[in-house]
Length: 354
Image 1: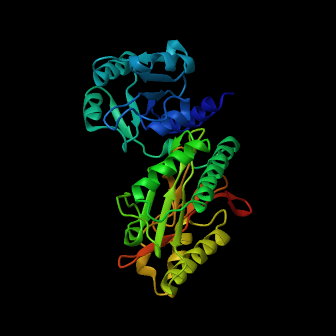
Image 2 (image 1 turned 90 degrees about the vertical axis):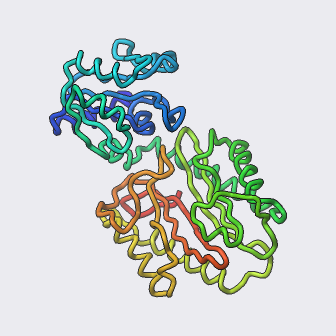
Image 3 (image 1 turned 60 degrees about the vertical axis):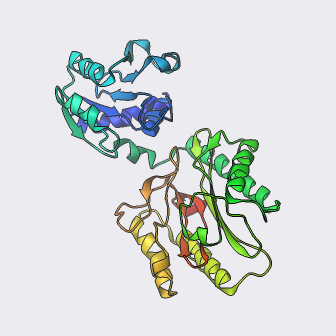
């Protein structure tokens, strides 16, 4: 059976339990995960379409004329609905025509305009995380794609290690990184590169600017690419120059030790928030707990950031097949910061480095 059909069968089982007539999948990555159709929407205010999952019948792909040729290569024409000038109104009429009354939807992605239009004629039920919970567990093909994506990422870092960086601006280096990813086989970037020199490294999601890399300063680089649509995400922090100060060495050692602590202790069945607090307690014991300002990591796959989040409020447990980042960081506004990130797959034997 086609892997996309298998995935939709799991959604069907869930919506049967919820007594829904259908479930409307709007999130781009969820749509792709269930159909192979369009991983990205064209713009933030546009949609390439949606999947309508029916518990006991064939599912529908709903899209507009721009995607007809692509859609018919993936989908039975009899279950392909093309809307034109007024998406909301036409989809509403389509639901009414097919006597679909109780519709589940993804509340984190549906616009108010779409909700208002549909709710005039059907009963809308918000159910968040139905597809995301499936995506948390990667199959063998997904893990292999992610491995290749990580390999490309490591090749990029190896290339950077051989380059002369002094005098290059952050934004010039970020652009060079994008080109290197392409040269090594990435289909696109997973996210815009973070290149932060000196004090800028204290900003976890810094946007590269015109600051030049100089001798004797810290340089944080957080980069990721895609292979077969699957993301990698790696951060490394370096000291540029030969006069490495004790404060940088100490912080780097603490961050890498915290990461090692997390990887060695991650176990199937462990509550996710407990791993976060293991690292937080380690930093507190070393007097730098307040400088650890974000989650320990996140799930990664078709999206760079997806479930599960490795934060202090996640009561879920680690399961085999999860792929997550482990990325502790410490940040000091007066000189910069250090983050060190690896990706791991959760196995019955613990965390396996990718």
